[in-house]
Length: 136
Image 1 (cartoon, rainbow, N blue to C red):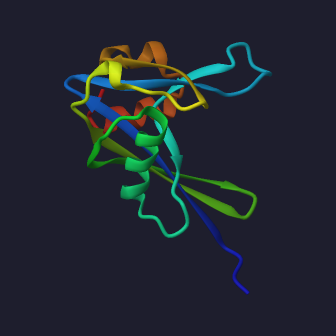
Image 2 (image 1 turned 180 degrees about the vertical axis):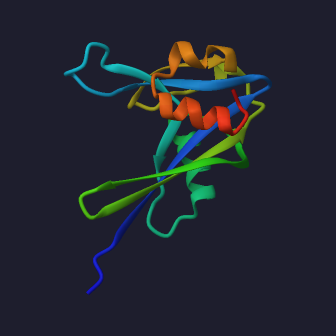
């Protein structure tokens, strides 16, 4: 029997004009700064297309209506026998800033310009991926 398991993760890099939505998420009690800035992310439900999943995740976590522009990059990692496949999307919205309504798992949100990514985003691999995708 084949026990390969895949999990599809989606990341919504939401753009409005020349700004991108960064969200602050709780990560870990055991690190100096337990909140980390990130882009909206989540998991596709079984049978759901990744494109539909990223739109749903953006809506659920921020209240924003967005549309997929394009895939920026992908990534994979293993946890035990489970392969996690991640797809980062550029999503576009024209909704106003005060329309961001955060879900309970998010602490804060800010619209930032690409020149500010370094100040907020600690994940160096993600920054490198965004640079390759010519977002930053």
